[in-house]
Length: 150
Image 1 (tube, rainbow, N blue to C red):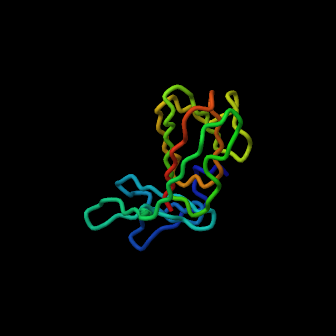
Image 2 (cartoon, helix red, strand yellow):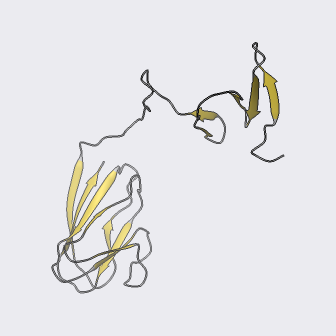
């Protein structure tokens, strides 16, 4: 059976059909768009407050570590992996050299990279990326100015 058709149709006490799919019952006559998903085991629904605004849990950070990594014409670690990382920023302070960043534990190169930071370029690491970041410059001029939030 397709994942779009209900596995079972049940009825509530008012004879409203309830489509049951992936273990979640949703009234067929629901006059609104319902957002729901599964965590692989349980159905999860979008939580709203009394005004209908979505309720989100946002992790915040008040702890940072600032480091400088000297420019290099060979691949170097810009930021080690850190499972406590909530975010990070990298600024290429070189006024002439491009910094090639690779979000991987593999070596960065000028042909194998995730993003280029042109001279005086700034980069915000994707939220919740906790892996290693390597970099290589087009010339060994400048520094990577790194701030990591935990």
